[in-house]
Image: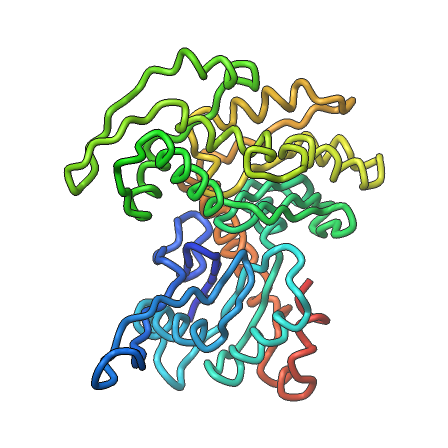
Length: 360
């Protein structure tokens, strides 16, 4: 049985049999609907409650995570109880040791896997484009991770996590739409779709500021028939990544953060890191984002300008959205056949701490 690769994010969970040249077979929301008794209703009526096991990249509700993985592995991937296979998980930047141990414990004690491995998302994303060194800028649903990687090892001292992500950009977009359309009540799910349809990046900061008086309004009819007008709001989503003060954060934009992170690595690696910069996550598909990023990179004070890596032609479309999963599929083809993974015997002998010795 081929190994399974799981990339569990705050918004989406991606899973499938390790196939490096294919997108993950399953992409689904990282949430569970639970039926709970509402004590405030008569007769103890049951209501549905939506639970998000993963928050800003890290598992926060292990019971819900177990239920979600049960659904994914047995009902979708096709595992059978008593005949479970090997599994590889992608791991966010700065994952606490305790969470790594909880995951390996869950896999061996609840799912009875025959082999386990995990690896950091930054490393895996670079594997997906044929690199072992470079720097990833991963704009996730609940966080932005900037990680220099030298010869397959994340430089944690130089890495940085920003506690903002796609969910914060969606909330910002909702606020701006409400400000310009005060009489319209927009459903949160509609805001997410509107962001994906309309959000874009201005060419630079001056162009963004000029849009105040020159942006052409566009009318959009919501599913319920209400009509809204979208103007400069479409540009503010992307601008917030380059001017975090828009989100109320006293911090530098992502290009400056990238250059600063790399500057904290030994200078002999600077060129290799900056000239192999990779953007990851669904947000980067925003119209104009890559051009804006490269434009700001070209104006950087760094002696070496960040240059974006282009994905190989043979890799699936939307590689940036699935890069960590695809890199995991590549790695799974190596670690399991070569017995570099955690085995059931090793887990039974050493316990959950074995993950720190075998997975790095």
